[in-house]
Amino acid sequence: MKRHLDSWNVRQVLAVSLAIVASLVLLLIPMYTQVKLASGGPEQVSHPTLLETVGPSIFVSLLIPVALTALPLLLRGRARTPVSVATTVALVVFVVIGSASIGWFYVPALAAAVAAVVASMGSHARLQVRPN
Image (tube, rainbow, N blue to C red; front, side, top):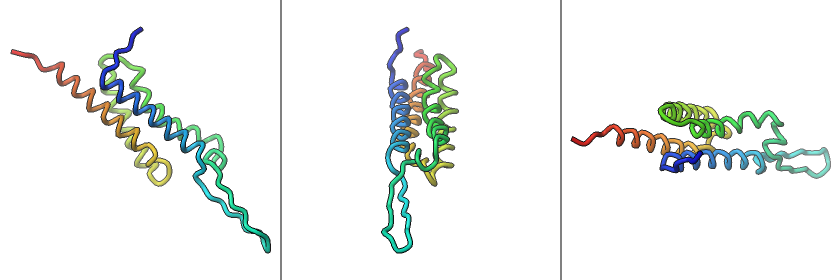
């Protein structure tokens, strides 16, 4: 099966890629600083990752934006646009709710998802215009 690479597909693949990169950054880059003070001894400073701090349950939170951006790529035809809009709105909700912690890391993926929705709406508008 050959996939047609139109502007919507390129933008949606970019959204998925950016969500994956953000999740990997959050998973692998140290995000915390812990300082342990010992009485009379030197302090110990460590920089744990999100995985070390929260544990394996963080995978669920990090996979939500990846799944939201990837879901529209699995669909074809008329269902693609409404699902793309719904998943983009859900990603907006995720970014807003998570803005106190990890949500801001997904703003680039959100921007690409919005661009994909706009491209999808534009292609549908062009298809509906009929010359006289």
